[in-house]
Image 1: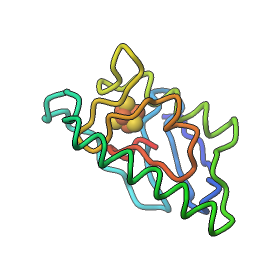
Image 2: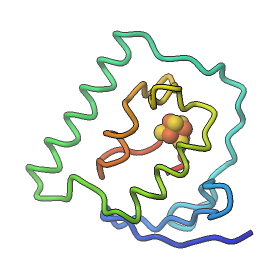
Image 3: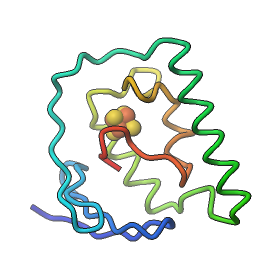
Image 4: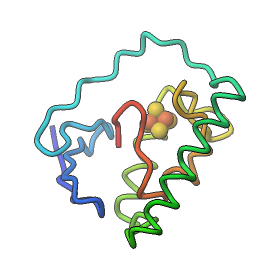
Length: 120
Ligand code: SF4
């Protein structure tokens, strides 16, 4: 298995399999493989509103703290690759995870966001 090590703007060190986009470890801790036992479906509208409010709050906190809000092109490409091969990605490019529901094109660009399945 070919892997690549990435250091994200948030200081975390990620190891990703470049063959299938699966995360191997985050800060040296192994990431458990995703077991797709949860049905793939969009979260409810109230849940999506809560999730979106949390994302906005994290962006505001990052701006106030003077931290990077957006990821660089290399990390963005890895995030897109992971989502493109994920069974939770919808045909309209949204994440169908109960803790998400986001537009992936926006979520992937934000340094303050993370995959709810720890794929990035
Ligand atoms: S953000 Fe959603 S679609 Fe992208 S890899 Fe994670 S679970 Fe899959």
